Structure formats: structure tokens, C-alpha cells
Image (cartoon, rainbow, N blue to C red; front, side):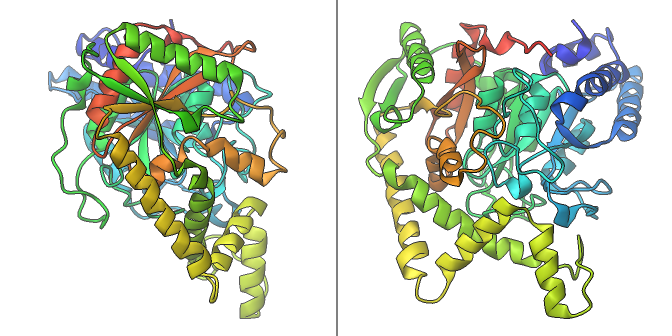
Length: 485
């Protein structure tokens, strides 16, 4: 095996034993990126010089006999909507083509303090608006399992990079499934934490009440290590929750005795691919054979989630993206007249999907329509949240598919927005309710494409989710399969 193929925890053990150096690990990842990124297009910006410099610092620390953090010397990729001081951050958009942040996001600052090695900024749907990483100004990212298919979105670059061994770890962001859905399609682990668990400071906003940063990793153990490093209160984020962070590695316990699993019938209906349904239900059977109990349950307002989400998310987006006017920073239209400059900047700076969502959001917030659309969507959001609260009175977790289908072909859905939006049907309710969710590989389609199983838990229930995911992972080998690219 090449070093780039190992997990973070394996490499950390090798570093502590001085069997390898951080530089060797970093060079292995760089070599892999140079070999395959021309085909996958996972990266927008590569920071190899910075990575090699950091790896040298970690190696010096090890030589001096100093203790190192589990992430020290380990390459990590950062989704390109998370600010990195001195390194351009584009959100996959022309309008931020040359934007270089003067500060680090809190998660980036915390990772730097731990000694992580930043390898580059990953491709994404423009402003995180998409489910396939086809809307990026910097071109399509391709799924390493089949280069003719999408990797999911919007964190498709991060998920594909982890799957293709073009990084060891990655960060994504999740507004309506943008960590979990690409993790499912690329056969890796993706966790969306409880809203407020991880600081959003430095995350370029799409929909502020829904956005969350989270880990994308090769296995559940790596997920706990990365979650430990980036979780915790941040006074710079007004939505950050001041609550003690547990050591998530203590969740790595293979024990399901007494665990009660709810299976929401609303998630197993029309539109669900047969192979995905079979893969998920087989996963539930395995968990039951290991000591868990499963029972059907209902989340009665699920049918209203898509409509509610696309009103709330687009409304917040229309407000958040109003700042991109060509005046302060970013792309600017050439016209001298102020109004024409605004029009040209925004019409040519944003892609079609971003403009569609801005217009939807602006309409739903406009005078005479606010009560009929946005306010009603907020009330439905409360009902969806209450559905989950009722379910978690009886169950430790809920299990659903992550995505209704395995990865689909590039170009298959891009011209049909509604069909594309339905790709998030099993993930968006989690964001509306603010609860945590994790996607883990649970099988493959007849075409050899990964299938993801989603585990949902109550607010700040990450420990239980990780325990269940870890137990499943220890009794399967899906996470160990690699795409042949």
C-alpha cells in the first residue's frame, strides 16, 4: 500500500513509531493528486509548498521527542467555501475568482494549531448550491468509482478526494445534505454535526440557519479524530453552543445491546432505488443481528420538507449573497455606471443555479408573499423538528437511505432542477431540525457504485451515532473497498 491509502489513525501510529515521516506522507498524497486529479478535478487550489513546509515542521517536532496530536503531519483538504488566510477561497464561483481571505475560519485555525497539513482547497457546487458538483465555475468533479458519474454535492470535491486517496482527511459543509450525500455516492464517511457544535465563523454563508461544517473521512475512527479537533464553542460565532465537547474516540465501542432503531416509513417510498433500499435494510438486519432492535416509525411532515427547505434556504441565500456587488471585493463588471455595474457583476459573476435560488428567495421574501411562503415554511420547519423530537423519545437513532439513488451520470439531471433537488429528499430534514446525521457505506449497486446508509440522532447525539456506525463498520468491509482509478 502507498502511504496515501492509509487512514489518519494508522499514519499517526506510524509517525509516533518513526516508521514514516510527515514529509513522506505528504509527498505520497501530492504524487497521487498529480496522477489522478486531471481526471477527477477534485481541487480548485493546490497548496503543495505550504503542505511540505508544514510537514517539515512536524517532522522536526517528532525528532525532538515532542508529543504530537493525532492530526499532526496528516494531509487534509478544505472545501473551498471555508476561509483560509492567504489562500484563495472561491466558493466555486467566478464572482470570488481571486478572493484571498485575510483570516482563517475557526476550524482552519484549530486544525493549524493541531499541526494538520493543508494540501489544497476542494471543488464544490457554486456557493454550495447543488447536489452533483456540476455547477462549479472550475469544472465538474468526477466520481472516482466511475468517471462518467457525479460525486454528489455540494462537497463533491472533498468526498471524491478522500475516496481517491487524494487526501487523508477532508472538511465539507452541509446545508441540506452536502456532506452526507457525496459521502454516500463516493463510499466514504460523512458527518453533519448538531447545529452549533462546530463554529461557522469563516464559512462563507449560503443559508445561515442550516449551514454546518463537518468531517469527510475514510473510516469512523478518523471521523472521531477530526470531529474532536474542530468541535467546540467559539465566541466569534453567535450560533455556536457553549457546551462541553466529549472525547468522540470513546464512542468507538462495538456494542449495540439495548439500542433501539426507528425506520421511518416515509423514507422508503416512491423514488427510492431498489438496490439502495435493499442495501439499507440489509444494514438494519446486520445491526439487529449484533444486538439492536428495529421498528417502523413515522415522521408525518416529511413530505413538506423539500418545499420548506427550498423556501428557507433560498430566502437566506438571497440575503447572504446580496454582498457580492462588485464594490468591495471579488469579480467586478466593467461598466462605469453604478447600476449597470451591479447588474453586469451579478449576472455574469453568478452561475445559473445560484441566480435561480437568489430569485426564488427574493420572491418569497418580497412584500405580499412573506407570510404566504417564508413564514409558512418556518412553521413547517417547527413541525418537522417536533416529528424528530417525538421519535427520539422512543428510539436512540433513525436509519434511512442517504440518497435515493447511487451516483448518477454527469448531465443526467442538471437541466431538471426539481429532479436534482429531490436528490436531497432524505437529508434536508436533518438540517431543518438541527440534528446530527452520519452517512456510512453499506453496499454497492450492480454497477459497482457505493450505497450509503444514514444514521440520525437527537441534538448532540453524535456519540451514539458514532458508536452505531463504528459497530457496523467493524462487521463489514465496505469502507475498505477502493475505486480503481
